[in-house]
Image (cartoon, rainbow, N blue to C red; front, side):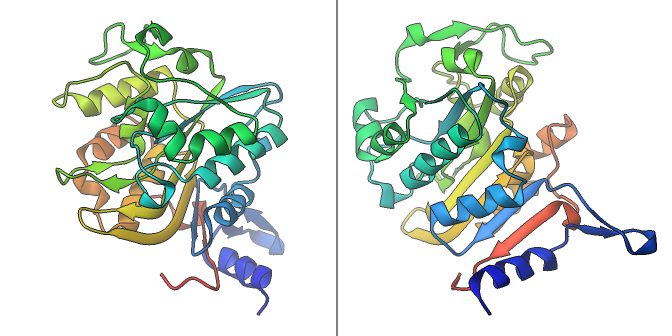
Amino acid sequence: MKRRTFIHTSLLATGGLLFQAHGKVKKAPTKLASIRGGSATEMLDLAIEAMGGLQKYIGAGQKILVKPTMRWNQVSTSGRNTNPDLLGLLVRRCYEAGSRGVYLFDQTIDPWTKCYKNSGIERAVKDAGAKIIPGDKEFLYQPASIPGAKVLSDPKLHQLAHEADLIINVPAVQELADGTYFGAFQNMLNLMWNYQSEQQQAEAILDLLRFKKPTLTLVDACQVPGNDTIHDYKSLFLSTDMVAAEAYAVKRMGIDPTTLNYLQLAQQESFGQITLAPENIRSIVLKNSKS
């Protein structure tokens, strides 16, 4: 079976078609693309195609904030930061869809200049035409008023969060040294200057979503670092629903998403769904996948 034929067959086999009377077929809306088994760039193009193309989400002339994980002074193969090839291609696809400007930043654990450079992200996204901005300068963060906020009172958010027409959240999921999990929700927290409170973290993230919810969430689960190894999951999850993207990514890692309190809270607050109907998911496993 040819590769494209295999992909197409896999796509149809996973749902997404609703049959109506008189033999007519109506496609259910795609809310999540789950891709597995290829390179990061190959899987990204398949995910975009499965979701109907970026033109469906990006308007001509829009300014886009791509929010990666860029926290660590680690090389790309460590899995600690978002895959640079993935980000470079995403930037190019955003411009092809009509964006007037794509921007990236992150607050970092290690010195930001080393994180940006040694992760490979800075070079990859600049080559694709994006601008990459510091995340460690307080003057770049401006006060924000969030209607309906539960815990954030006049937080300081990065100027790109204020200026962007839309956000694409691109976390590199991972287990941290203390046994906690870092994913799409924690990645959004770095839009805010120097947030420290662990006690109300989930509520703070939901307040950020009240300010500006990501239009798309692209979870990089290609190489996922654990405490003592790197798991080669070769998986991407692209969704309009950040809750679903996170939930299906953690399932791939063997974590029960219902054990993550912030996902439960986000679902209760109507920010998304932990479980989607099968017809709303396009799942593609590439023929050469061994995982």
